[in-house]
Length: 544
Image 1 (cartoon, helix red, strand yellow):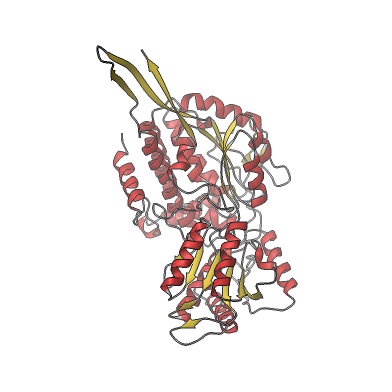
Image 2: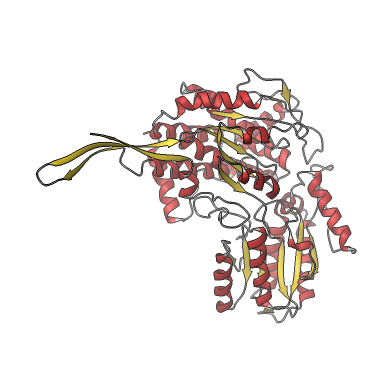
């Protein structure tokens, strides 16, 4: 096996949960001219048909991506296929792919990741101009971080698929004779998988399910969001190229592109031959996916993430840390905090008591200071991916009846960029605006009756609406223990007293489980053994 040492290193990292990166996140770790080549490759794609994906039998070319920075269409066109031909080809390819032993499958899949790594910079620009992420975030999230999450799936899949003996002579002594039965044990894949991508993280959220399907022997159809196709199209193109080079059908992995005006997601999801579905996106459609009969489903849906403030050492450090977490990609992350629970009486700090109003103003000023920093502001904020998010912010602020402190920021490179700085809103716990996900740059500082009321509300939101993260600031060990126990009971992980370079909305591959799978924010985890094992079935045969 060519890549066995790399598999074993990844497995060790998964078991120990310590820091490990299979692909370096620092752009300087790559060729000196890689950035220039990546930018040139991205620019050559604009206003052209996408090259690199098998397009036999296409029904024409479509595309509707718009750069949130330039506010013009990218003009990239992708081959369109009917749902029936996609599934038919996936089924045909599955007959071949499922017969390839797991060692060779793993080698091929890692070869795919290595091929994708040659296009990390192109992926960065493609992600930047489809999602609105900054270039650095785009490079890391769609490049090395996505590859690392894919490697998790490959390594854990290899481990689970080789856990048991493949064949054995089973001998039972019966007194005067031995009963001998030959047995074999096979992990049998389920068939065709569908992976439905989202508009904000088209690669990072997509590849774990893709590679989990493939290592388990399933073929996969990727259905990206029509506004964020290019990044995952680049990945699929490299994957198909590796398959062809190995004499394997390119239809083992396919791209299903549609338009917002003519979606094909439901047709694919409801197709009787599609057995597995991975989904990232809003809760309403996610609940529909979960309701489909006869499907094995893995979802990451919406959640409402909380920050509980009880006491702290250094308010300035805390406000600065939270300002970055609010502002990173303008809050368009499933892990970004939304609700900050603060007792009406305020909080204790090492620098003295802070009133509720002082917490609100401290957070607002920290966000404003970051946004207006010429070296950081626009590059941390990125751009708003779509008008729906922008309109939600405008409508919410209008409904508040006042004008909370915010900052006007322009992008130094892209004057037409769709920017929206985070707004910090003080609100009473009795109001309702904060009680659902307000995706994007909105933060609510919720005035509660007490520290216990804060915890109660955070746990209630996690139970009813789901949560992926929770952050707590406290110097009281007893209260911290109560927060950990209460929030963990809602299947929500807690981060405590983050300042400096540790941010609640960043999850590390090989160490942090992404989404617990235990509350309404989603039913699956990146990446535990269940994420792999539900994609195949162990079958044993016996021979007398």
